Length: 486
Image 1 (cartoon, rainbow, N blue to C red):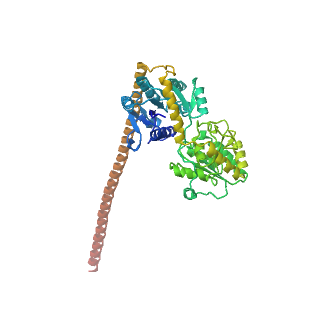
Image 2: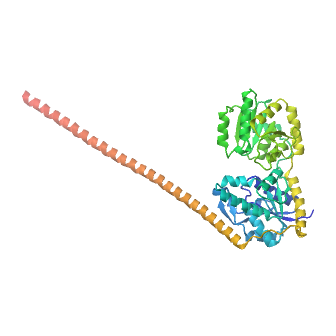
């Protein structure tokens, strides 16, 4: 293969971590290591040190909107990015985000005459629905995303389910399924590490141990898990269920579990980021439970497979792609009764669970090295197709539209600045109020001390007067008695 220079774009990149940012990092890492040249284009973020990477990272101007949407918002028409494209002699642009990064990629592709690939990672329409309540604004946001999608030369999806989601939003073109990889090695960790990680938890040997790893969000099927466990518990069956993760609906999930009376059998570890610790939990578990129909890729299923741990997943879900029931995983319907029935069936069949786990490792696991190798091979085809003129023309970005986007960026910035100013003013007012209260309290205390001193002094004077009157009266009485005696 030839060594090509590839530009990778996304709105998030470490130190911000999510699934797509992790994918971008691994693309850059393995392209640079084994195939060609990688340059990452991502919004500026305060306090970052990109010298730690073996590939080049270019940060372009951005607005700090983490308080609004959790991410930096980059300006999508960046001269810094254009200069980097020229310096690195980039031959292909690959955006992993259909929003701002896609706008930047489109502008660079037009200006430099380069092919553009977009990967559709997740169900962005659900994210938009959760973030925007207005139906009109939601429809406008989705139309903007689809305009960016249709402007790309080639569309990749991480699964067939992700492609179907894209179709449901109106996309009519072709797409290629290009699965993401797993950054865990294909092996169980040692017994010593498992023992150290799981010590302190009530995990009796011989008792089935089930596992979930990820953000504790209801839409990942957590209610199905807990309701199924309640059914098993009601039958007197012994088991342990470990939830590794936090955030999202964690508080409600814990409360719901406790309300079902599962406190003695359900364990919540909280968030875990250390990869070997996660591997220890995958290795300790007998089954990984993932009854989610939201996720477009289900990487945790492949992470479990890295430790030869089989997953129980919903038939027809994205996570179930490539899974054959009883061979490399276990399939259920999307309800608690179906999950309870499957667990009840498997609790007494540890050898079957072990064999299917090995099948998962053999057939579902894919490393990031292999995933990026597959992508890079396709890059070569895209570059060749572009040079041969096999991709049709796309609608160009119009100057007035670009200007409106710039104005929108400025509005977003103004809103965020106003929010920060308000926060600052509120903090100043709060601090002043605290100082005033403390000062008033101090002044009151000093006034009380002064009053107490005055009261004590007055009382002492009164006592002196009373005492003196008493002794004066007694002296006069004595003298009177002496006069009568004479």
